[in-house]
View 1: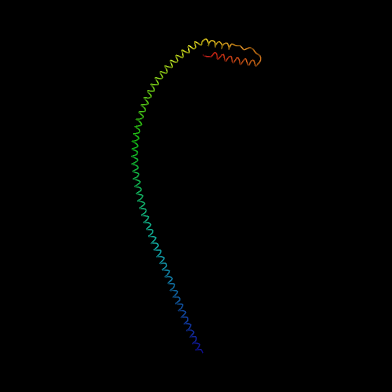
View 2: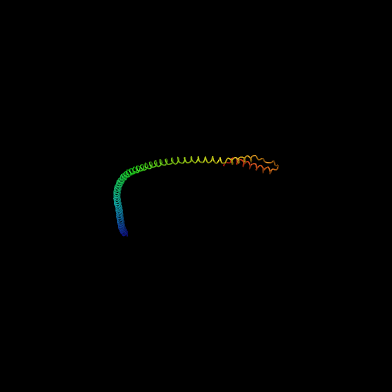
Length: 222
């Protein structure tokens, strides 16, 4: 009975060892598989990093090429702009010199024309001055002649008027004497004595009137 127990225990131990060995093998294979998968994952990650690094390198190279290309384009454009600027500057300088030369020609032409016009104006002015002098001389001669004739006529007219006035006054002497006598008479009239204020006013007004008439007669010239 004990021997049988031993045998069974042995069989159980062997079975257990077998099962443990199988389990250990399974665990080993599982670990190996996990290690293999981890290695593959790490390799994939490494490849991904390498791929990304390569892409970054390619991108950097592309950007560098584009940068250099752009720099070259900018340099070419700058050179072209500089050439165009120099061409424009040279063209502007040529045009400026042409304008200056044309301005000199125009100024000289204007100077000649101004001098010609000045000479013509001076010539015309001299002619006008000479004509004015001649006209002024002729006018002065005519005015002097007319003045002498006018003065002679006026003198003759004064003489005739004086003689006529003297004759007229001589003829009017009797009339003037009569008018003066009337003036004296009117001045010598005496107003009567009155008492009422109204009568005094009337007489005073009459006196004033007579005095004005007498003064007018006295100063009358026929």
